[in-house]
Amino acid sequence: MKRNMQATHEIVRVVDPAFLVNAAKRACRYETEDGRRLAPGYYFALWRGTVAVRSYGPDVRYFGPFATEREALLVRDCAAFLGIVWTPAAAASDAPPNDEGLLTPAVRAAYAGLLQTAQQALGSYSS
Image 1 (tube, rainbow, N blue to C red):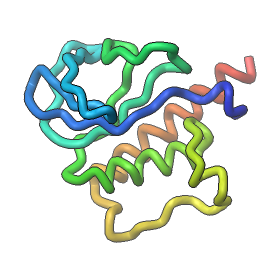
Image 2 (image 1 turned 180 degrees about the vertical axis):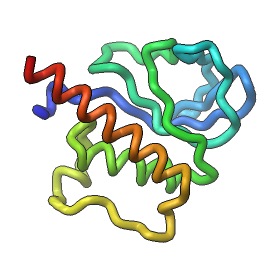
Image 3 (image 1 turned 180 degrees about the horizontal axis):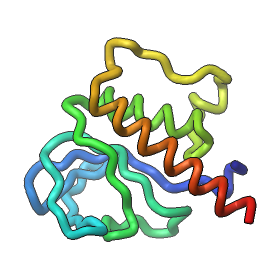
């Protein structure tokens, strides 16, 4: 995927059923596509495509919850390796992220979801 086709992303932390804390350390209300509340923890938030103004509405897909920010960052790095998002670290490496200590069941499940997202994106760009 070309860099300009890659999605907007962020690591957020859900602190209670109605609010998350974004990367700028601001508390924000959020909503999910299906109206469910997110469990407390860290999430890799992925917008559908690029966005000019980040809002935490139903166009965001949340991968998580993770117990630590490091786990969420690993999922972000996996998304970068798959070409879904761009990060400076991923641009400098051809190798997939590999931190065996953080490959928890939640990280593995998020990676499976990212693979599905990448496959859907590739299908939409090829048609």
